[in-house]
Length: 117
Image 1 (spheres, one colour):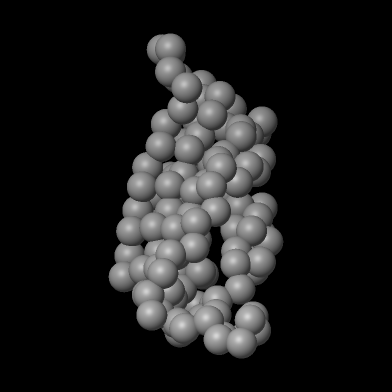
Image 2 (image 1 turned 45 degrees about the vertical axis):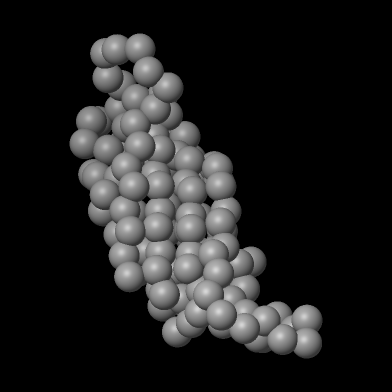
């Protein structure tokens, strides 16, 4: 059986960016995660599926420990870490949004989406 787990609009404070203001002050980062799983949940036991409870703390740790320049780099680190959690994880899609950017213009955020099988 195949199904998807989605966690949407997780929020963190991070220091991701190429501008000195971003590295010093940081900004709000929102993450959406979609994980395709190949497992058959049986007998209402957590061990028969992938535990999504591990996703948020792992992403939080990655953001706190990685002051990278590019949100693409952050997305790749998240994908790699999530895929390592369980062999039943088939595909990981992550969307990273940066709010409050030091860029001239009127817009809500900048977002990238990355997917890896």
